[in-house]
Structures are given as C-alpha cells and as structure tokens.
Image (cartoon, rainbow, N blue to C red; front, top):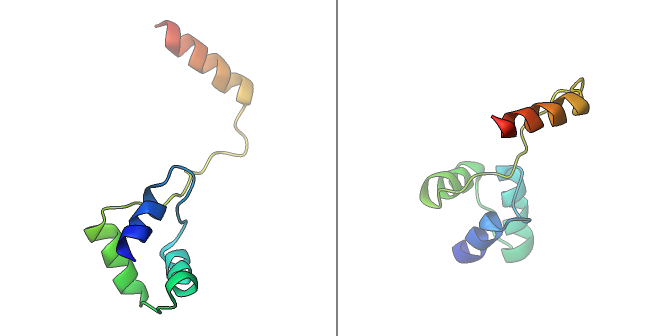
Length: 76
C-alpha cells in the first residue's frame, strides 16, 4: 500500500492536491480509513513527498510582457 502511494505521489502527471484527497484515495483503493494526521506524517515525513499544487499566478499578468522578459533574460 505504501509503495503504491509513493508511485502515485511521484508520478509526473499523477499526484494529489491535498492530504484529504490521499485519505479518500486510500479509502477507495484499499478500503482503509486512516486519520488525517497519520496520512500527513507518513507522506510528508517518511515518504518525503510533496503535494502537486501549482503556484498561484496574478490574474492581471500581461502575457506579452512575460514573453518579452523571458527573451531579454535569455540574451543576457
């Protein structure tokens, strides 16, 4: 069960967005109800895995300015 969880956590397209989602997955796949603190401790401290959560971006961000910045950054 731990090996399958680790494979699911480390996959490039797979992963979880929250520890509650991991709890739900374990309940569906293995029919075990593990408390939230236990899931957090095993995933975070023992498996050293991180959740797959994207960083927030500004809604007012100018895409043209980003492209321009990346082009000038690459030339320097």
